[in-house]
Image (cartoon, rainbow, N blue to C red; front, side, top):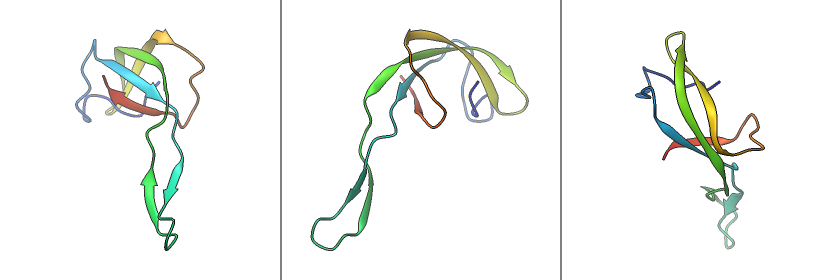
Length: 75
């Protein structure tokens, strides 16, 4: 299940890539938070249905080991 669906622009059949969250990156000189690095690709999901106003149901397309908090992006 995904917390993004039709309102977010997801359509049935979309392939989504799943990534680890990545690491926090800080400026080495002043310690200011710069953001997160891109995490490793864990696999892909295919959107097969929708739930409520902005949720989706997906099936594993490739990979595995997905966890709550992983990053999901359109492939």
